[in-house]
Image 1 (cartoon, rainbow, N blue to C red):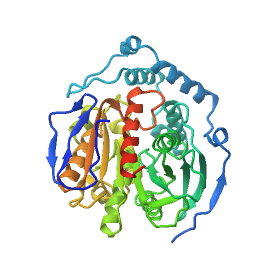
Image 2 (cartoon, rainbow, N blue to C red):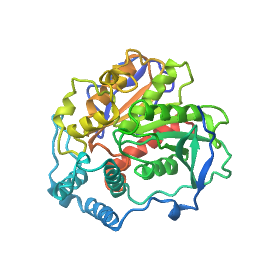
Image 3 (cartoon, helix red, strand yellow):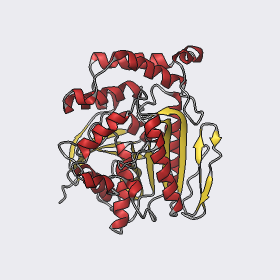
Image 4 (cartoon, one colour):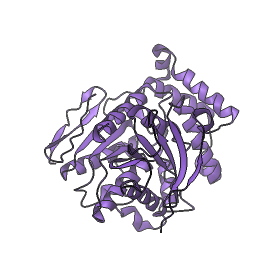
Length: 397
């Protein structure tokens, strides 16, 4: 694989890596609690999976059929080129073209409950056949509901395993344990680690800092010896996509502030790193027509941040933090056609300049999101397998 995660934060090479290798701009830088009580333990596989209506299932099959067409047919969808010369992947372009014909409603046109169902349905369409895992249980950690995945071959539920604490995306407002079920199964199955998916509180019912507090509480429990059964507290990573990536690194910032041990790795997939203005060039270039839009980001911000000054908090906008030294080693993956691309790359640069071991990977032809699109996009699968490699290396699997 074309990356490495240095585990000693000095003399770290940090470059923008694309699907064709490392780009010319590569640079070198210095580097009140509730006990965990099970809700239920489900039988293997079939009964563990989220349930969707017939229409959603048909659309999911259709998406997978569409993107599996021969390359010459997919190219008819037209691969858009960005200002850096990257070309949108053909299977991604075909998906976007199909979505443009459906004329679906925007999240703000429906109730919050309906919007949350919409994003769960979209994730199901992109996730493909869920990978097999050994077991899935749901329980509470310090009052926060989690879904705990363990890989096949983990003999006893008490056996301590390297663990990824995962925060789903969805603008702190949408998303769920179900929307990222396929993502967590992918990590669990292919990295052979346990995954704890966190059902943190969502805005607008619970604006900042509620969801952030939940993310921090579960991470703190995972990093406390013996608090969560089956977790090796010495081998824990935090991870998330989009708003979940924001939470993952914000948790690291808070732990540094509280002088608590860092996780072994932070995995930030297409992360939100700043809600503060002015916006970056990629935010304007990719503001419409590439799945995540600028209008959606504005809507998410209004749900999550209820006090204007909070957009400048490092726990909302980590890029605004003056000091990011001492944070966990970072693996940051961005998409070439994502409004959030530039802020993710700027955050990687800031981490590297302040001595944090960081690897930045730009997936040139992908859009936001891709973590739960492994069922339909070939390069999404490759991207997530690179995440798997980073996790295995950092957690010594």
